[in-house]
Length: 47
Image (cartoon, rainbow, N blue to C red; front, side, top):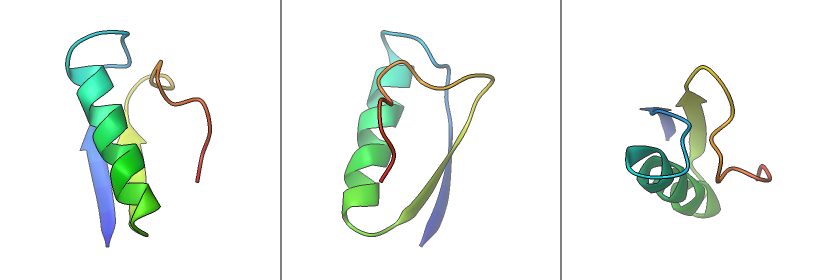
């Protein structure tokens, strides 16, 4: 499934939850796109 997640790329709050959710879904084989003005702080590597 292709999923777009809109979030603020900050170190706390919704940005962390959105990043962790996106990473978990990517590990299950989904194609995740983060829609934000810069890379989320917790997104260190891509799958």
